[in-house]
Amino acid sequence: MSASTAPRSPAAELHRLRLLEGPILSTLITMAWPTFVQMIMFSFVVLLEVWFIGKLGVVSLAGASLVSPAVFLMQAMAGGGMGGAVTATIAKAAGGGNKEKVQSLAWHAILVSLACGLMFSVVMVACGPWFYHLLGGSGDVLNAALQYSDVMFIAAPLMWLVIILSAILRGLGVVKVQAVITIGTSLLLLPLSPILIFGFGLVPALGMRGAAIAVICYYALAAVMYFRYLSKENSVIKLRLQSLVLSRKDFASILKLGSVSSLLAVQSHVTTLIITGLVGGFGTMVLAGFGAAARLQQVIDPFLFSVGTATVMTVATCVGAGHVERARKVAMAAALAATVFCGLVGGLAALFPHLWVGQFSQESEVIAAGSLYLRIMGPFYWCIGLGLILYYCSQGIGLMRWSYAGSLLRLAIVSIIGTATVHAFHADIASLYWIMASGMVVSCAVTVLGIMCSDWKPLAITRGLKGAT
Image 1 (cartoon, rainbow, N blue to C red):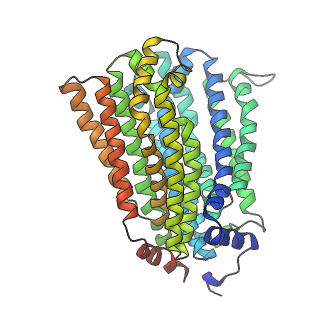
Image 2 (cartoon, helix red, strand yellow; image 1 turned 180 degrees about the vertical axis):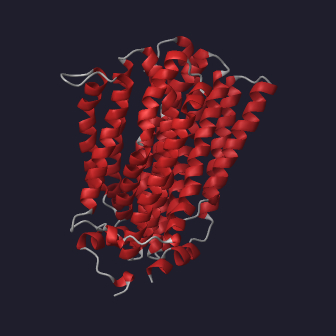
Image 3 (tube, rainbow, N blue to C red; image 1 turned 135 degrees about the vertical axis):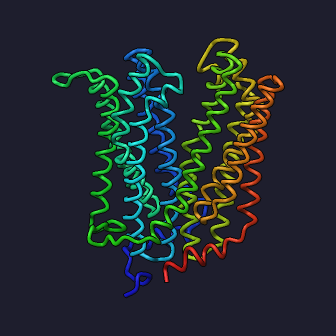
């Protein structure tokens, strides 16, 4: 019996038919809402842990803040970068009906995750002191950062593993199981963090190291639960070590898409660091106002990630099955929803900026600086939604060059034009914000025109159906 004709479980076949034939809007909602709930829960737990660390004092909080950029970068590379590529390749093989290919890709994705995590461990443990010093850390703050970072990044392979296992389940459409695992393990982290940080009974107070250990326990339990599910007879696929056969082609299919996606995550973070550095040159009050206003994106991120992962899953499945026109309709529906949502949020923030910025500070200079940012940038927030959803679509069809080109142009506009305008021409902060908005529009336009004007059929034939025959 060939791989393409191998029997599939009723649940897997039902899921496949829903993605290929079900109503587009309800299908996207069904696939997106468990991830949305998962993101909200995880964000709450992360914020609560920062609150616990803050109780240790300003030094500990500052140390954790130094580590945050590296952690966020790793999570972006693992989740939206390599994880998105894994979801796309798994979903495309599932859409083509190739069960054996799905199992092989899942094993190869796991091996890739461990290798990437090990790389992060080596780099951050070896270069952590230099990196945090570059960000301004010194003395007790640097020591606090290293206490947290060294423990956290030693377990980087475990963290990558869990994120990629989650991406595998998304590719298979098992979003409810994934959400249950995340919420269940997050509930463990709620009491464990304060116990390990401050001590309780026979457990000594471990401070910053305790905060990192609590996070590691969260990922360890999640990994056990993921593997337990994937080892069940009634799971969509059953991973067996004896079925693992290393394939250069399977590694390549994941890494080719995942490397570009991960590079995009790096470019995005570099752009953010450059913007923050440029804004910081205008003084503490402006930087504080910018920081408060820019946190508005944390409101839209859970929505965009949940819709985005549902989009990449559905688009990849349709492309893998050769249903290219349906894939286009799914992409347009998701892009429209994200554009409208982000446009409404940004528009309201532009009209009433003080209501948002005032939640973080009562300083009039901070509110004025943050309000200026939202009045200029808010009307362009629709670009964030449209561009990001089409980035996920580009993962689903395996066509990343337009998203990459758009991101690179935005980085160039901010780093070259923005830096020159601020340092050479001594422009005001409003000019910098207009340059940032221009970068968003250009990046979005390149991504939209490139992806929507491309012919998706050859991608379905060469990268989807071919592997299923």
